[in-house]
Image (cartoon, rainbow, N blue to C red; front, side, top):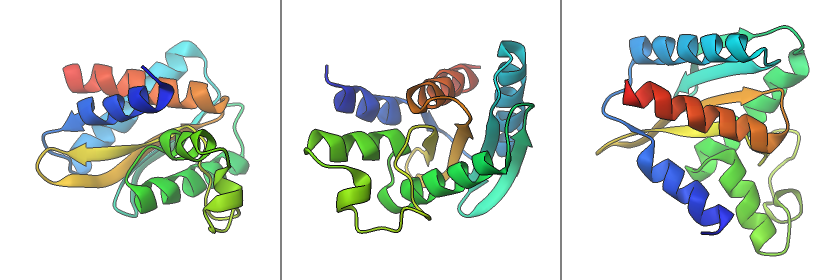
Length: 152
């Protein structure tokens, strides 16, 4: 299975039955506990639409991580796919997001770490993401924790 196929499969599997403020807060707290337990220097964001419902910044992060999450979240909002999948899609076509998307790289970043919040029967309603690790690790952390959260 190619990386792009794996990323698409993750998005197809990690789907919520509902998503409101309480679910967003629970998800944020779940990610925060996992990041603290692992000693990860990440910033965490959970949004519904453009409203940020949860935000936390652990030691080792800076305001730059807030900007990275915002830029990656705009990519998910625009494409309806994880920020990592969007970036990999451009790379698979022999180019980069920055070269070919025609979007301002100061506002959009197709790097791993932000994942779409999808509700069954509704579609993408928000984003969940982290920033602070290399992009593949940011993405892997979010995917792993989403899987655990949804399996509860």
